[in-house]
Picture: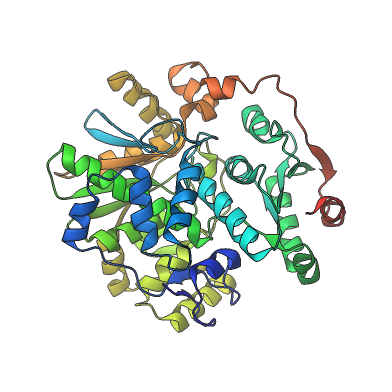
Length: 462
Ligand SMILES: *Cc1c(COP(=O)(O)O)cnc(C)c1O
């Protein structure tokens, strides 16, 4: 399998190179040259596979430069850290299926991809003899999942900036209580945007980037998308067997479009007879729901909500969908992205709108609706939704048709206890979070200044 850029300016590369490249060097995003279609016979042979065996089969369709036994061992190790034997189990509550993606070390769905990516990086670096310094900024969730993904790994150091005293105490502890010597938490005396600006400045300094082999872990890495395809296929098998049916729908709480794009790829692989609709659910930061319902992709200010991991302005994976919407035309995709960066908006014609509505349905869910969804769902079922999951459940119920609706549960409610308490009162913390209280921590507090952060990285890079 070869990988190309959505902007068409790189020659096709293999999977391993695509993982190490992250963002394509022409500024585009990397995608497989063709998406593998899974025929009915293969599909039925996958039906009974465990999560890990299915992950091997799915990933093998995208990887031809890692041996089968190495890939199997990467997968086994990546999902050993999950606390549930099915890795991503399903529960049925009040007529909808909840796909629980939060049984990894940080209790959010990003673990599914980042546990794998961490092991994959370590494996590729051992092979090449190279090293990598990962630099990122977080508003909470991604940072801890990335840290857990690479803690203790050889040839990798990780530097994660979070805004000092502006992440929740639990989120802060999830990061700063990791004491492995390759993990560096930096509390920036500023905002999340300051942290992001510093990361951007650092990556724009090409000599610095090359000197320290800087790497990123944001959701533009193809390996993250690939790992997420697996649970769509896994959930499809579980639900179609339980309900004795052919076709299911998914509802996905969406921020950067990574998760729902993995669903889009799963649907291309399995076909519409298996996955009919993808519901794209947003919070008040609704650029993606405006795009689907009105063809209006124009940027606004970010509004803080109680589902902070979906508070985004520009969805970094959107370009991947745009490429398919443009009939895999890289020139047109590059032109659209240039227009977007100048005009901060894109508009879509009737043909495009028809294509989009064949792929997605979308709903924006307000803050009040999030709280009332958590409350009503709890009253009806005794099951506690986290605010991100509640966004998806609200939208999923709105669009439920005469086939099963699978709602992705992207975080454990214990991670967002303030919003949950507002809806249904205080809930006990899950043991793995309660355990963090009082643990020793390590964190460097630095001014929100690129030069100062660079000096720190200089002194601690691998
Ligand atoms: C990151 C995240 C999302 C959004 O996923 P995208 O791939 O960015 O669309 C939703 N919920 C939670 C809890 C997250 O951490």
